[in-house]
Length: 381
Image (cartoon, rainbow, N blue to C red; front, side, top):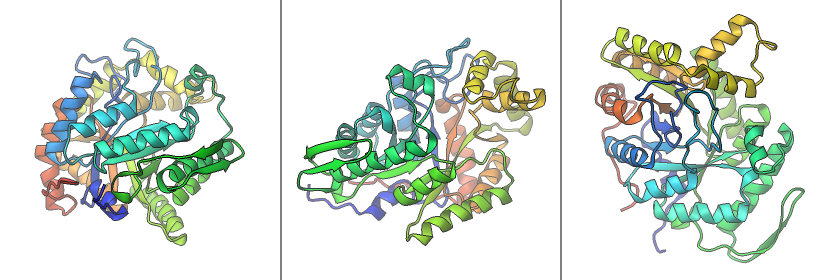
């Protein structure tokens, strides 16, 4: 492949906007709204493809899937139907022109040599528009399906470091190589082709602990940071700390968050719909199953804390919630950007129905604030 693609070119592909906006969780049934409303997101391939092309045309920067292997039961079996993220990303990359698409991978469940080849294949399909969202550990119940034991927190990242070192060796080393790690051993590995254009895919991680942040600072181009419980000043303090940590080792690290958006012509309409979805029609059985997996139970929390958590997880799985008219939504997104965030991975109750209104009303407001541009660039001709 004669075409060259620098690492800075790849970074630019995720969006030349000061505030990058992506869509999160559309590969899963119900998306991120644990609700019974009939219009909830299907997660079907047909709907995902329609959404990806809609987002591609509208200038949305990226798509980020959730790696989920079984649902949370309840009335809707929330996330019971999901599309595997690497094949999902590859299919969408083949059918879009400029939008960046991530695959989300649990490192303990995929052999790194196989995974490295999958990533390169998707990277060629998207001509450099593929990115890796690396997950170092997750729900024990899901890991049990594979006969894999969840390691303790520190060990997860030691394993992930070995895993990623092997993936990068597959991407970079022209000659065969071996790796003799504490957890992973491989011999005489050869892997071709190398990633598209001579540079590696972007890597992101959502580690929120000190260990997770250290891993991201060392290895990743972007990190997801929770912002649902803090003031903007607290958000800014967290962001400054992690970005400063990266600069101390000569690296720049983008920081993203996840969000749940409900945007309607009036504040009243938005608040009424949000309440309808997340309170009146919540799938409380599924919500309680999610909370139990996080050890949020009547035995560990007060009734007030438990109820607050139930409401928070019912719509958005604990993302930054923005509910209001276009002015309010744009203002809140702007404040996140001013706090230092580089982007947000957003979700809607029904992505395809709600995205056109968001794009027609909120994006122009962000453009006027200098946070977005109308320019829609094709990543690679």
